Length: 268
Image (cartoon, rainbow, N blue to C red; front, side):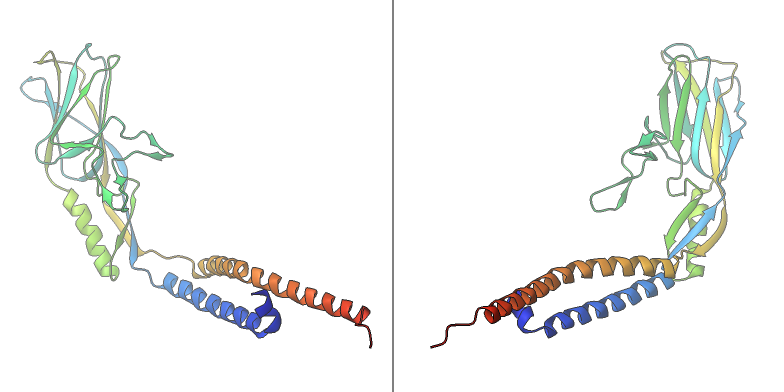
């Protein structure tokens, strides 16, 4: 390569020209893609509420009925007898739970959502069912669960759609599919027998209602500058080695010419 560059300096100019052309074309591609996005950002309410439970017929069970779209449903009880077990049941909606729910997971809160090796969303790390049990610890139980895992747990989600109307329809469907009449029951048992307690369970839920839908946008100028800087860095690394080879060959050639001039061959 050194000899080729030293003998044909036009090769270096050609490489630089092609590199600059590719930089401009790819920069334009980055810029155009930031202007037209197929993803939309939708925002929902993310309000926590405490539900009031009622005990019917003195059967030791507490009941409450919900109709909203619910993500988190947490139940806590205190002053429980040792060895007791609390059961939370749903009349019509299966829900997820895990002992690790809400705990730190590599810097992020664990929410039952795992990503497999193909980067597809899977939900298999939490137990799904219409009824779940939780054991007493030091006279207390803190039960955590997620009802509709498709809802944005932080109040902000993203969907893919062709236009704003399609995105609004998908966001509305996601909320409406999580709505429905569900009756929740909570009971405490010890050795298989229901324990009648005077203190009712405390049930906290997080409800969601659609607030807005807008196109997800990036700053085209900023993204183009980032892309341009990356491309320039890559092509610079590709061009630096040939340039070093070219200039070193030229320097060696000049040195050899100088030595020949200083030490001419002997005359006959």
